[in-house]
Image 1 (cartoon, rainbow, N blue to C red):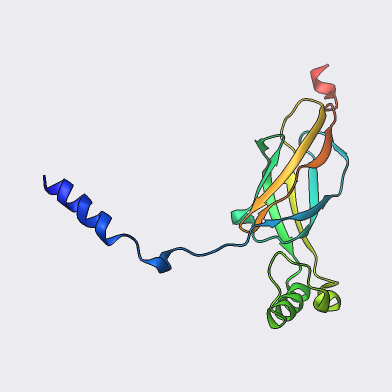
Image 2: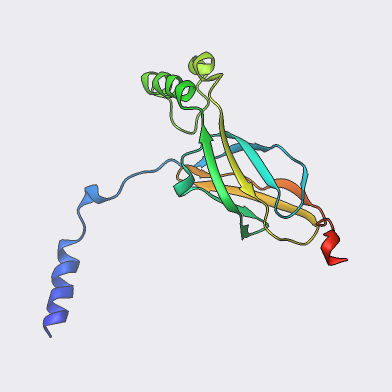
Length: 149
């Protein structure tokens, strides 16, 4: 009976309106450095907006890639970030007024291709800002190891 009363009281009080926020979801604009790779190869996707290795996931044909590392050239990107903040550009929008300040800001994410069967696959990158569309990659057959012959 007490638990029913507690639930009823919780239902009446509700949650405060300021506990939720709005988050902009971006389509990450990325390009892979390779069209083809074998399992174990390192592939790099360059573009924006990227965040940090801790909140970035790369999936190759639905399989989590390993050794995911985000690299952002801090000094050049700090100038870009300052310009974008001053111009009040959203994280997802292209900010024309800051094109020059952002020209040298390089953002990339590298990952190791998981062990998958040969053929075409899609690579998707997810982070706190959003996700990329599936980027095309062709998985090649792994070379035969001389010791296995």
